[in-house]
Image 1 (cartoon, one colour):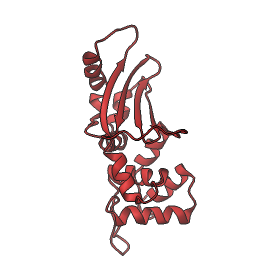
Image 2 (cartoon, one colour):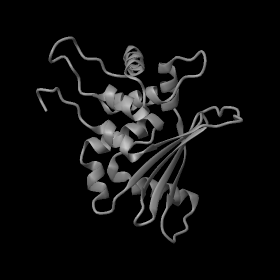
Image 3 (cartoon, rainbow, N blue to C red):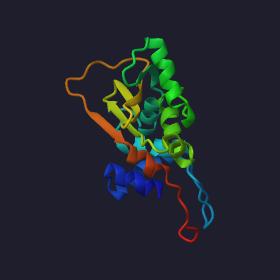
Length: 201
């Protein structure tokens, strides 16, 4: 189910998706079950995120798909900003408020991979729906080439949001043309769906 979901999200052909999924499993970035009817495994939050990253982003020439996913996951948190309605905060207070804003989601911000895992995890449990309650929230993740990733979690109705920016340790040279890839909330909702065997649904 995870392979099919990620293939649908990224518009990959089934054969290409199968090849990339095997790459992720061979590189120990995605769990692998055992042969037999009950040999399957429930995919972890990291399995789901790694599959999406492996399907979405092609590695640079000479780099493996597994190494590319590991590199992306290691992007470090460089800034956190809270954007409340009609309030001015110092940079330090703004960062503190940003973490407080999403505290109930249980997301860790050790690096980009951990943060993305946390978003999926919050949707696999009741954390995200309990947190948003009657104030619908949105999640947008923008990949700005290889230079930075912006994670924004906001409540549009109240005009409150937290923005977290992740960057690699060593910034790449500026590209003449930069591709921006945007992931919407629906991506994480679909990744969070729990798979069951056909006779267990």
